[in-house]
Each structure stands twice: as C-alpha cells, then as structure tokens.
Image (cartoon, rainbow over all chains, first blue to last red; front, side, top):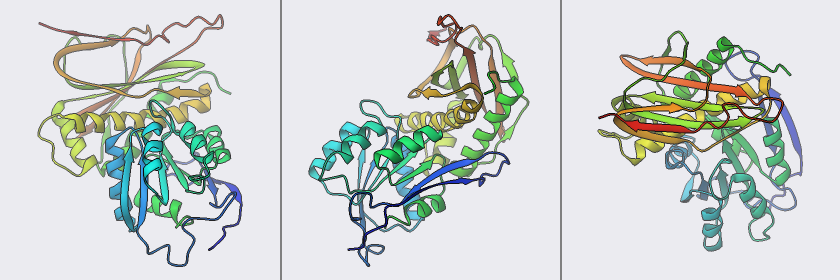
Length: 168
Length: 179
C-alpha cells in the first residue's frame, strides 16, 4: 500500500478572474496518521464509493454530476443532509471518499469532521470540505482537524478533479 | 482593518459573487444593472424571496428575489432538469444559490468588517405578499438581468454599537398576505 507523505502547505494563489482577489487553498496530502485507503496502484481506475454530506439536495445532485464530468470513477454514492445522517450511514456502509459542507443544521461539517477523525474505523477516509466558507481561519480549522482538501463553492469539474487527484 | 463599507463597494462585491456563481454553476450570463438603495420594501410581490442571515461585529441579511418563472428557469440550468412549476427542488436550488452568492459576498465583506457567520437560507414562494426585515437600515440592491428576467440581490448590513446593544441585528422578517 502506498503511504502518502505527511505534508501540508498553504498556497496563496491569485487564480480568480478578478485581480486582487486571492483564493486561499490549503492542500493537505492525505495520509496524516496513517495509510491512504485509496493508495493502491489501481486505485485511480476502481470505482469509488462516496459519501456526500450537504443540507442542499441540489448541491448533492450537482456534485455527482460534476464528478461524472470530471471522469471520477463512481461506485455507490451515499447522501446525507447533515453530520448526524452522515455518521449513521458510515456505521452501516464503507466509503473511500467523503465530501462535506460546513454550514449544516443538527451537526455542522466541523463537528462531523471532529467525530469522524476520532473514530478508528473512519479516520483514514479522506474528507474534502466543499463550502462557501472561504476564510483562512475556517480553512486552517478544517486542516487541523484532518480534512484532506478544501474547495469553495462555486466549483468547476476541473477544480474537483484537481482537488481529489492526490487522494485517488 | 477598515471598519466600514461604502455602498458602491458592497454593490461591486455583490456583482462579482453573482456573476461568478451564475457563470460557474449555471452557465448563464447575467447583466448587472445600476445598484440602488431600497428604504421600503415593495408593497406587493409575486414570486420567490430568499433570506440568509449574517452575524458578527456587523450583522444583517442577504436576499434574492425573482419571479417564479425565472426561479424555475434558474433551477433548470442549475440542476439540468425541467421545472414547470415551483416545487421543493426549485426552492432548494434557490436556497443554495442564495447560500453561494451571499456566502461569497460575506467572504469579501469579512476582509473589511471582520469575521461573520452565515445562517441557513430560508426560501418563500407565493403571490400577493409583502416581506420586510425589521432592521432600520436600507438595503443595497443590485438588479441582474438574463434577457427579460430579473433577479435582485440585496444586502442590508449594520454594525453592532459599542454598548453591545444591537440595532438592526435582530433581523426578524415579517410577511403578510394582501387581500
């Protein structure tokens, strides 16, 4: 099994179309504290079972479409409206990748991430936060809790593909 | 940190966020019209109104409003499905558009006014109703056009005073039906 180097970097990019509008991206290479679940040589061709956690059914649907457009090999896609539902799904099902919003009712994405990483059965699953929250503080908070990536809404298929390229 | 925000700055943030969301997620080009201040809400409205709260050292509300027809059209572009009438999926799509647009405005506003939290959006659909916020400050409105369809993106922000008393932060909303 491939062991990803435990590394993190904060990249300051001025990639948005409007000048002087920095986009802070925090790239964490998955593998913090353990092996990648998706690190086998054939991982990039094996269908991925995913969990999408967002209170918006529209975003859950759109994200699946964008993943198809990004040519991500999808297996079973599970959906949850908040962190509580997501944890209930994880007790029954196994997934290789999780996408999670932050602002959700009942249990938000930060609380969900905290509980996920505290559980030995789930803590190795990479989690990509997909959210409108763009502050550096939020990005760092998610990174410190073990998020494998952070993507701001709105997003394009290429951004999704780029974000998960190091995870699959 | 700059602790104030000019209306034109806010209008520009609204314009950038809206155009980015429309271009990236909907593939729709919208044209921004001149912004203006709205002191009193329309007496009567038909269509869809959404609200999302913001709170921090400054507090307020963001809102989107458009006709039911345009909401269906936007949802169709958003979800790649056809919607003839406003249903749960359309309401959800408009809620998420509100979340993304106002959320991105909030990210820019925070650079001037400090950290702010964002609430979960509320979306209302109906006819012959009026809606207003109980805050005392004017709304900055930026109208957007896609052909003959119009979407208004509005934000009202007010500072909490130094004594810790809020003026305008209890941004409760009231709705009444006109008979």
